[in-house]
Image (cartoon, rainbow, N blue to C red):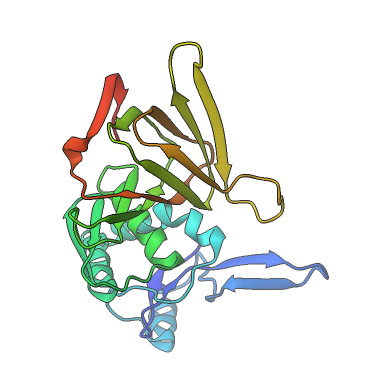
Length: 251
């Protein structure tokens, strides 16, 4: 079995082993495996040895394979210790100086905002734990600012829209993980235009960024198990500025 816990340096410990080209084990995030027949004394001694402590947040970078599975990891932690996810979240908001305005929307408190894989993965996992599939980190301090930059996290596959902002401006998408399909509903003779954007370092010809007119209705669909991207547009902005087509799916 695997044992998920927290050590005294504030790291979430998960064991995952892969084999390198020589067939030798390579540990992406190593903790000793606790066997199914381990006694309580064996586990207690191991926990003492690694300095297991109360809930905190792993501030180091998270391997991508762990990041993708973060939803399931947080669920298991919550099952093992009810209320642990909330404690993790409170610590994370404090460490990254964020303000939570809804179960899936967070705003930066400071002018300088730093986001890493640890923050992104945990925000997505916390959103799923609270019954949502998306999370949004607004890297601007409030909606009155001229530049609106949002780090969008699709923790699961979703489709949202058609939606638009009826203004003479643009919306841009810059992929950090996964892939999206963005459909522009021009109507009339033009009809729909379909674009795909994705983060792929191995294919130089793949589109990783897209800028579209805000006034055209668009549908956004996640093509991968999860996706992370930056959405940017001009402000000031309020939720009422977004218009939804009849029958649109809202996320």
